[in-house]
Image (tube, rainbow over all chains, first blue to last red; front, side, top):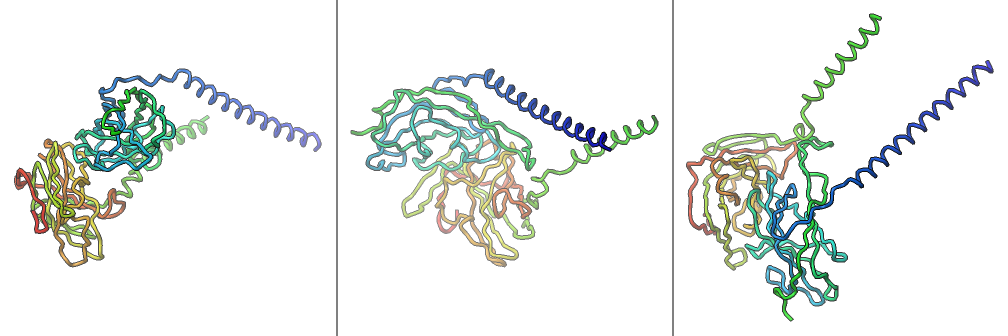
Length: 196
Length: 187
């Protein structure tokens, strides 16, 4: 009786030790894998302005950047603010009309950039959807405090997504896993379109 | 020994069967997708909740309209497609917010927001049951897509378990104009 109780306790302890070892091993493996991935991760490619970048959903061509006192629809920027503008060409590479271009651009060396506004150059008006296979010239505007110091060259990162024919939840097609695909350095021409 | 072999065999067969069932089960997106009705341009196409008759399809390079008294002109690299339709709701007051053209390549071109503010746009109209309502949809698409077009209509974009009507447009009946002035009395 006593003997069997002891052996039972031993067995339970043994099971726990095995389970603990397994957990530790899994943790170590996952840590090692993530360290390995970070170490061998590819550098984000540096791309010249004017060169099209394939970002999955979008074909993005950054052309120039500047500072303006008017937004492209002809409105004056409010007092105490200035408009940082970015000229680009956007083409929708997906299978349907889409306005999911907001996350495709990231400013790297501007502190706390607000949510930008996108304008369609052709209409001098706000941009809504972009139709597939119809590239358009687009102006992006960030309204910043007038006192904010800006770098000489704007560093812009293009964020790309990848297509999945079936997502894991609904088995529906979609674009996932945003990751940086290109970094572009754009000289900031202060004179362009800026009044005194 | 026999028993072991049998259980292995049974396990294998079960795995195969389950894999077959899993691979042939329609996905959630398909199971809860739209309830489609397809038809041709010359017919009135009816779904459970609404019906549509395509009256006229216009192709143009330039559209003009005056949303607040001031005339606006919109050009395009592709073409503008103006589809005038007569819609009727069957049971309740509803609006048709989602319209798209499926082009020759299978890509989906939703209504263009560049024409927002044009008169007689269908999404701005309420459909009252039993009362036929006429209006237009405006699309912008590349020229190459216009060789084979299907109009896709539903109450909301990406409807789930709701009616969607697909009308195959007749390419021969498409009228081409240089410039279309969209007024309150039609195009």
